[in-house]
Length: 272
Image (cartoon, rainbow, N blue to C red; front, side, top):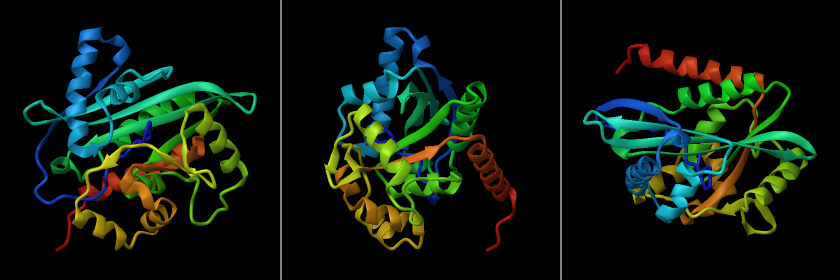
């Protein structure tokens, strides 16, 4: 699941695709404001998109994770093509609960975009606005993003924008990460694949990569991608790497700066 969640949230791939199809408008939906009939229509539409990208999750589980989440607050960004048909989604959930005897919020996400429409990192502005708004309205509150990442692209994208991320290649896996991740795994019912490696859990969401994709990731020069694969070699079987980001104002400023640089780079002319 950037699954997350829920699995796993799978944040959008940052890989460019040749011949990218034309996108239309995107819209933000709050499922709580929809009638039961409209929520079911939303589930049907997004599950069709989901099944083009992932395998291993029933419509009922998908509905519980993405549309009918038990989170205190949920918003879903829906990407549409030029014909107005849904081709991608990014759901963000804010769970308010207690950690270590203090009020805290855990952010989880699920996202996916059909292959023909990838390449522009369309979710980052939405996620930054949602998280920053919540951060500013809850000063002093501990806030974490928790992902059960099921693909190297999700970890790469998170590592690009987060100023502090656990686990990472330069830090021990114990300490605050080990303590907090253990609590969160129990709270969300995330079962470790191996009790000796609590950071890797059963998720079930399997990205529909082909053999070329899989070989490409194994050969990727990205240190973040190679770290992810070492930590979670079973991602092809639907295993997720529990990834934690403390959401501070410093973290948000860092992410905003990286996003601005990325957007500016898209405006510059490309050399052959």
